[in-house]
Every structure is written in structure tokens, then in C-alpha cells.
Amino acid sequence: MAGRLIWLISWVAALVLLAPAAVSAQSTTFLRWGGDAEGGAPFVEADPNDPAKLTGFDVEIAELIAAGLGRPPQFMQVAFTSLDQSAVRGDFDIGFSGIEDTAARRATVATTVPYYQFREVLTVREADRERFRTLPDLRGRRVATLGGTIAYDILLAAEREHDLRAVSYDDDVHPYSDLLIGRVDAVLLDHVLGQRAMRRARGLHTHPEAVAVGYYIGILAPQNVELRDRVNEILRSAMHDGRLEAIFRKWNVWDGDQRTLYARVLAGADTLTDASVARLPSRWDATLRYVPSLVRAAVVTLLLSCLAMALAVGLGSTIAVGRVYGTAITRTLCTTYVEVMRGTPVLLQLFVLYYGLASLVRLPAFVAALLGLGLNYAAYESEIYRSALQAVPSGQLDAARTLGFSEGQILRLVRAPQALRVALAPMTNDFVALLKDSSLVSVLTVVELTKQTQIFATNIGSWVIPGALCAALYLMLSLPLAHLARRLESRWTRPTA
Image 1 (cartoon, rainbow, N blue to C red):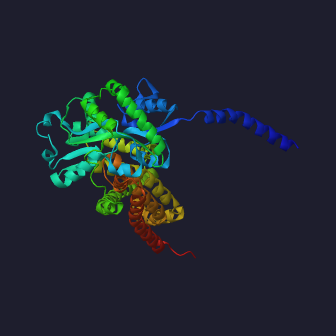
Image 2 (tube, one colour):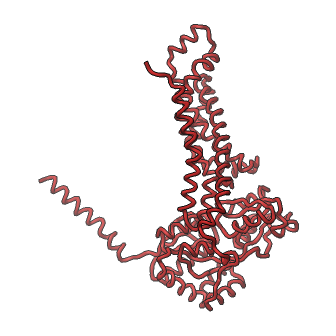
Image 3 (cartoon, helix red, strand yellow):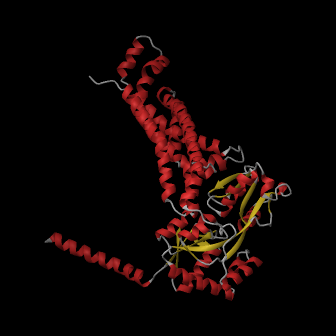
């Protein structure tokens, strides 16, 4: 009886507590809009005066649309490269974050009318403004941009035509900072970003000539056509009465191109960019085009992983020996290294090596990636080897000392061979984990397998085929290694009596 009474009281209390929230949720339907605050001003960024608030012209456009729909806006943080997939999944109602109008995007999501026209422009160092004015001038040079954008597609075509090298970034800030210190020779991005970079740092020059023209749009789930049509009505109304112009003037990005765009939109004309009206290849054709790039990226992944693992094994063995045989100071230093490397994210360590130390030493991206992964995994390897060394029976060590072996001989001839057998299985697991963690180095502009797959998926608007190919390539890299490790472990394991 008492148990039933307690259950009833708990049920009533829960009903009382949850009822207001349920009523509120039913009475208020938010307009969930997705964007990436990492893109920064003037698109979407945290307000410097109040980080809990967002500012940017895309923020104000989302608020304008929400007001037109009579719904309060609710921001959803989504990585820029995942906006299309999140729209298809229905994670938000509409996405705004400097999203470009492309044929691939129109084929996978519902798109609004364009609300801003931008130019793809070249930004170079001030000293190079006369040398590098066009893409042909950059033959043999490194040109930075954002992956999965119109600019990236332009640079891929220019790689074949003008023999330059496209360097892909995950954000729109580091391309310009790397340009300043000489890691790249130019940046091809929207003129909005180029102008912002010039205001942020001296020593840069953005050429006003357009390499291509593009448009910003909003995106929705493909089945959400009714909401898209209502949003289009609001945008056209804001173009007509000047509300959009006021927003862009506030953010100092208004120019004469927008009047031309608005006239075309209000007249119902097609507004696709030159880059996006080209025939969209089938997914099978796109796959055939991207397979060689995926294979090359897989080679980069394998090479990077093997070199990083070699570094981790060498350094980890040294640390393990230092912790077992070293003096008190040596053991303290080794332990500190292990705890620091294991206690901080490998992504943070990669950023520090590549960007944080740039004022002292400008490591190439591949070298920084190699060091970051190798130094991080050395900490984990050292713990494996230390445990393996300590697993060797002390009676064998005492017997070796009785026979007159030195500590060095004992380590080399007695302890290390047996420890290797114990450590082999976890070493293999670590190498497979390192193979997958190599995907993190894309933040340093290293185009490895996962990054190339992400670019592939963004350009065709689907993760199904790219994801399957990526998984198959990772399995082709990891399964032979696991098979080899099992064979070695079986060969080296002594039968039990």
C-alpha cells in the first residue's frame, strides 16, 4: 500500500512539474534556424559584448523571417560542412550561414531565392599585389580556400589548367593568417571575407576583380516546400521595401550588385551563378571522378599513420624505460609528459603545433600533423610498454642478475622480448586507432581520407556513396594489419603446459 501511495505522489508531482513546459511548447512554435557561429562576422558570431547573444547579417535575416512568420527564432549550432545534411535530416527549419547557391545543393535541399550576391576574389600579400592578380599568375603556388565551396571547385579546375595547388581549410580565418606568414601565396574566397581580412590585419590586398559570381541562399528540408515559399515571400517583400538593404548597410556589405540581384529576383529571373548552371554530373560520374582523389588521400593517411606510429613507438619505448629504470627526476619528467599528453585533446595539440608556434617555427602541415599524432600516441604507447616490462616475472630478472647480466643486457635479452609479446595486441589496437584519428589533421590543411570524403560528399550532396567508399578504404588499410598482428601473436605465444 505504501509503495503504491509513493508511486502516485511521484506521478502527480511529475505531472505538475512538466505540465507548464508542455503547455509552453504547444503554445510557442520556434523557427529553428541553423548556422555556424565559427564563421564569424558579418555572417554569424557570438556578440563580443555578450557571448550569449549572436550577431551578424544572417542572424538579422533569420530574425526578420521569424517575425514575418510570427514565430520566435531559435538558433541551432551546426558545422558549416554539415548544414546540408542537417537540413535533410530536419534538424532545423531553415539554414543561413553564407550558404552558396550551387546545382548540387539545389538537387538535395529546398533553397530560397538568393538574398545576397558575392564575388569570388583573390587576396594576396601587399608586396605581391602586382605579381599575383589572376589564377594563371599563381602557377606552381599554393592557393587557400574553404573546402566544399564554389571557390574550391574553381581551384580544383585551376590545378589542372594552371598547375597551382589548392589548399583546403575548415574555417575562413586561418587561410588569411597563413597567407600573412607565407604558408600560402593567395586566398580565393568571397569578397565579404576578403574585405574582413583586410580590416583585421595589415599587409593584405584583395583584388576587386571577380573570378566568379555567386549568391547566398537559405536551405530547408527538400519536403519543406510550403515553408520555403513563405520565406521567399518574406525575402521578396524585404527586398522591395528596403529592409534587406538596411541590414546589409548596417554590416557595411551593401553594394550596387545587390540592386541588380533584387531586380532579377523580383522579376522572377534565374539567378544561378555561372559556376552552378553547368550540368550537374550524375553521382556515378562524380564517384568515378573522385575515386582517384580518395585513393591518393588514403595513401596520405597510411603514410602519415605509419610514420606517426614509428615516432610513437620509439618515443614511447624511451619513456617507458625512463619510468622503469630512470632516476626520480627522470621518472617525474616522463610521468608529467604522459599525463599532459593524455589529459589534453589531440586536436588542441595539433593547433598549438601548427598555429600556436607559427611565430617561432613554421612547420609544414604534414610535419606538424606527424609530430602531433606521434607525440600524443607516444604517451599511450609508453603506458603499454611500461606495463609489459613490469609483467615479466621478477624471478627471471633475478636469475639473469645472478648469471652476471648487466641491467642493459637484461633489458635487451630477457625483458624486452617478452614484453613485446605482451604489448603486441594493444599496439595493434593503438595503430588502428591512430589510423582513424589521422582524420583530425585536416584542420592543418592536410587532405587525408576523411577530409577528401567530406569534400566529395559536400559536392554531390550525399554521404551514402562517399561514406561507403571511405569505410571500405579504411577497412582495406586496417584489416591486413590486424591479420598480421594476429599471426605474429600466434607465432610468438608459447604453448602453455
